Image 1 (spheres, rainbow, N blue to C red):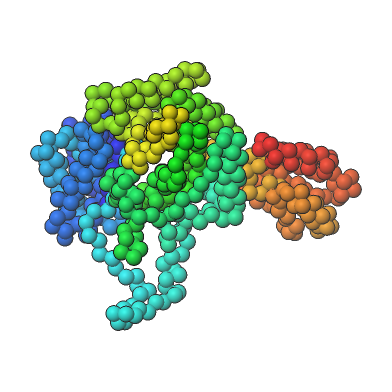
Image 2 (cartoon, helix red, strand yellow):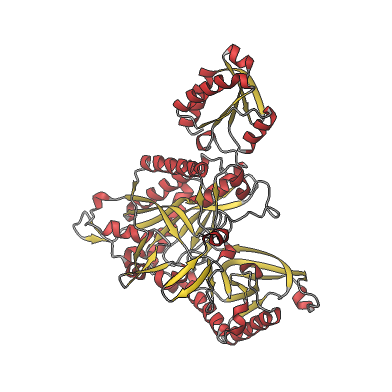
Length: 579
């Protein structure tokens, strides 16, 4: 069995037509259902579950475990979702299992909703933004079968057929049938940016062109953070279980962590960067004179996800988070939050994202006992966020009960060219990790104090941000970010030498340039360059050679008689200024 649990603000669903012949609905089941603040359990019942006598018990146990970890769930929605698995059980078995699960959960005084089984349904949901809001699990013992290319010979030796193995790990083919033309996965193929393989599900194979985009985003991040007074660190990928027990991840997040062993010690590949950052802070005594201390990390993290929920760059297993942790005093908090907001607006504005929505997640007054930190600290933290927003004349939607257990958060939603909203940036105040890791500083009074800690990201996940950016621009990235900024073409074979000379001049000037001197028709060469979303296409013909000028094509329009020196000056400034 495979499940994807979603902690949502709401879910609406309505059956449309039977997916299995002969099924009918009663009048109640035909109506649209709207459930607020539910834990939605998308469930795929598999073939192997039919022989597992404990599968119902394990299913209920996992649901209750998720409910307890999230902490404030009163309603559960059981939603059959076949897309999570390719090895589905008999429909009658699956339906009966879900009915029994509904009955068992109701006996535990839980409000349960079950979506109709065997029907195509339309559904709409809004997922909450906290770390436990989207978790995938595999339930029940799975039999791991050897591939047909492995033949058991003895207990200590196996024979492998390399050709069959190569066939099994061959590149995953992209099914374009249900994808829009501007889908980042299609653009990724056209522009030769990245690919995926079954040998590493949910992990990106960056090609040279894609890595250029990735590295340019990193360079921009580093430049802006250096100006804003941040220092950069890097922490290990694999760390001892003890660290994750201290941080609380082992209890709350273990099912979504990759674990391994080293000399009998249980370790985990990091799903988040924060605990490593705590150890850097604790490495030596700190003074109030060092605060505010702004520490950034472009850290690669891994989160265990089911293959059925992976979606290009938008949902992956390995990704890079542009984390930063700010340690400051209460008196410095307001300035630090304001500084982060300015940094967010400056960086996101560079990519044409101007339309922001701010939401402030605060605690529920009725359930104060579920949150860490004193009333005084919470009021000060929430009040500081609101004071900064008022000062900057930023409208904000207040969301009571949506705060993380460790502190309030300010989330930024951007709107892309298609009108879709994406949460990339967030600022979170944390009362939890400073206590757990006992981080302190020596104050001006020569006494020990606990610093205020802010978590924040700008891009969020670099992989996801690149996917959003590709679709936002339809692949037409600004020149400074483009893998290929200029393509030089010869009109005929007579112009090859002149095209080669221009290509070398541009390359020496530091421009990312390609040369096309094929004897193919000009229209085809231009079309291929347009498909690659190249910013400037330069054609060298007899007229250009004679006049020592350039014919430049940009965004489908051609400008003739351009002086080479003028173009070089213009494009180099465009790249340098990141226009």
